[in-house]
Image (cartoon, each protein chain N blue to C red):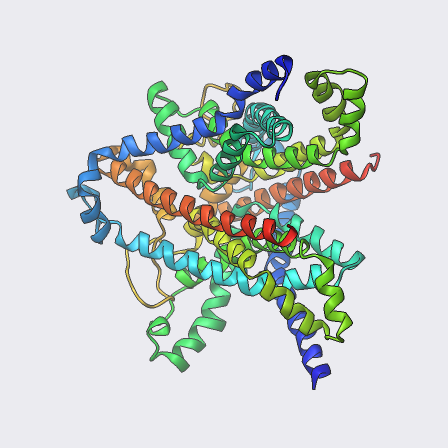
Length: 303
Length: 278
């Protein structure tokens, strides 16, 4: 199909085009090779909860669980706050005001995470501790997730909410882009039978459900790897607790705190590479599912 | 009843949107407030002095981190932009091919690699063999971190070019090569420039990719790309976690500087596509 000249063009662009795949392979193989030393004990390390480099004893259970909890909270935040933003931009304000709001969202996604981290550590953490955690603890302390006295505010909850706030613009932008692809015939049909804006939005949201779920998964994948905000808010403690108000760890926060000095010990580095491998695998898997949901839905709704 | 339901719905959407924007608006406001008051008391020295020691009498500045950030961007952005453009041209020219599908999948997967992992890779592939932290290692991690941004921005810029230009170019006998580089890319130049600015804004604030690569040379203005450097986001990160009040003030100042530059770059990237002449 391609002419002789086009073929030359195709093959001259092929090597640079495949660099992303090459880089990806390089990343996975580097991390894998560096973790190889401890791979035979991987399950034991993942199931243990200890960080004692002096005695070469390591376990990753707390950071792995912490990562899952923080990423789930962030995912919930990005759904609960992303959906209203989507409806505001794509359903209620389909004029100038809507595009202003969308520009604000894009602007928010250009905020450096370290600035959000600094703000979370100085303002969000004390605010949540005084106004959310203490009241919840004193009124609903019998529920395990609220059952500990909050100290200072550095906790799983703070990290989850802070990362959630930073992920919302990203999740919402994918939701908005998808929502706009719903053919206008649906909207016309809704208004034609006299549906209110609420009823129209309900029908649109239920149509877009796979795309919304996919956007949230993409947000969760991103939240999982978020390092800066997590390290500044999660409290950095090897601690497993059902209570969301206690300080804990996430894998990226553990890496940020420990990798710098890990070369002083024999096994600390390989264990941290193993931790990175776990998060990498989770993030790649979640985002693959998320992309599949969103792009599959987009093809169906337009087609 | 239905009207009430509709009102409640609108109220919920407005409330939810406000709740989503409020934290970021508050972060913006307090960062500017705290940071600008740091800059005001440090004066112009904030841009030319090294940072203070914990018990210094004066605030000092962030010159080494500022120069380090610029050096890192100068090293990381050209390869990221060039590769991003080649990738975007490839997927735009051969959309049905198997290789293009692979490139798409690769770019998506790449975008979801946590940037702290890129830093670990830069550490083990560059820092350990060369036995030193360097701007080069940081630039490698930053290039990788920013590639998904530049690729996405450039491919949407190329897709915006109407198909009729391609047809016109073919009809006067131009080859595909010439069509791409002499017609399509020049027509998309505003979108491409905008993408470069956006990538710059995002890369400037990247922290985690630099953690184990650049070595945070905090008190000396770096000039050697093969030696250690500091960067604004790293300085903010370290100083925010330190126990010293003076360091916190410097962190706020640096955060405001970083935020202002990011927002200006964002505004420029928007202005470029709209064709506003500045």
